[in-house]
Length: 367
Picture 1 (cartoon, one colour):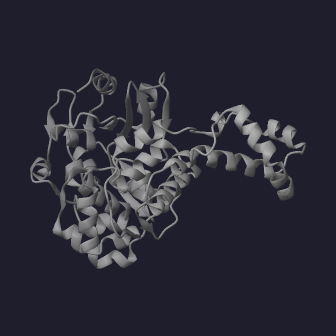
Picture 2 (cartoon, one colour; picture 1 turned 180 degrees about the vertical axis):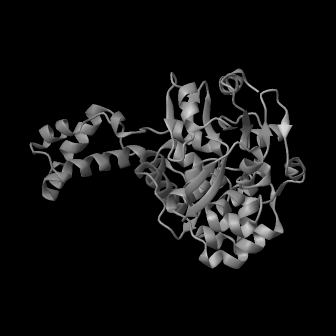
Picture 3 (cartoon, helix red, strand yellow; picture 1 turned 180 degrees about the horizontal axis):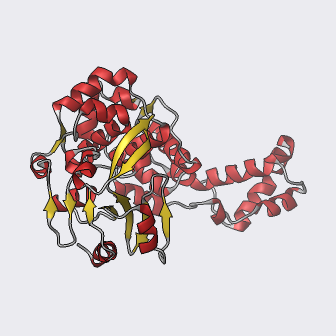
């Protein structure tokens, strides 16, 4: 346990309350994963107490009273022991604070996330969760039907844990999903968030193949013909057919489309390297089985890598042809780049000016 985590726990304990790390950090600790920066803390302190304890810190209070705090490299989510009373469309709308740790355990989604760790590193395990971690098994805390009816996104979390942790799901979970898959749906935002985590996992091919074979990809609204692993999430999305409009950013859409275009083109050449970013070409190269070294060597040998390197600009072209701004200028520049990339002419100002002058009639006719 790091110094920063101890300090946060100690602040709460010193104020007279119980406090434990819970969930993912404890699970990952037992799995020898030491890169967790999101820390969930469960405490007997009420939200008003937490506000007083962390009054001098930069805290945010969620709609259900938890305290969010950034400290050191960690993101803390500090929540009072509680019972979840009522959900509506996956959202918790009624809760009851409690001083009972056992009640707090009952509201957890899966046993592997039900472990609590005190400030001394002692682990509280009331649901035999450590055995499930050893057996790589995902089981629901309590009733499968009740947990998934309360919050269907827990199904997504179960699938995500399968992929990212390389775990199996309990038969009760699998049966529930397969029996109800036609009625299961998720918000595009949450689906994208969970898919992002699954798609960058090295286990994604193994589990997506499994999901596809048992028609479990239906609930993710996903299909694909072939899937090859690449560390870039846009490269993974580029291989999928997704039946729901996910909230991609403009940049994400552009990256996915670029990789798809390169894959459709089927090779990497000067034209593709000039049109698209080298990094995107390297991602697409993996999917096309083109050696990274060959792509880099090709890139280094390019006679021109961007418009900025063109040894003539639009103003000079207008002056040479005695014309104003027009689409023709763009066409001339594209033509020059094409010729330079194909090594038909050299990229120097004198040569380019001479070429434009010699073809003046052609450009003016186009205009």
